[in-house]
Length: 83
Image (cartoon, rainbow, N blue to C red; front, side, top):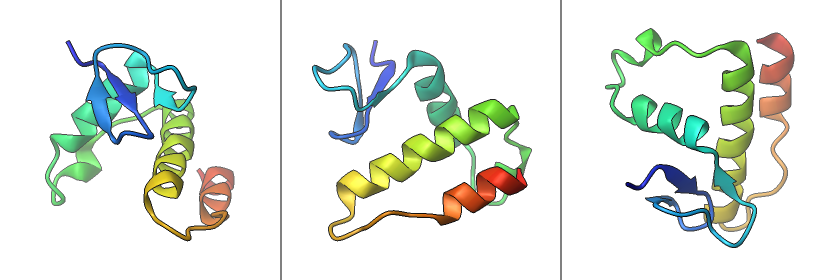
């Protein structure tokens, strides 16, 4: 079963990668659940504030891997302070 999300490869994998850039099984399950929502129903997706912060940090890391020339993002730090 592919229950770990590899941030560098950008996909779910069955085993932990050799590098440290992956989501835990719990965080990967939350991400998989989020993917099942449509844009018009995503507001129904429930996350604890801790899970929201961790997932946000990890998604920023994912985008830094995959968007060439993307520098440091500070907006998520502001969002963490607000939420």
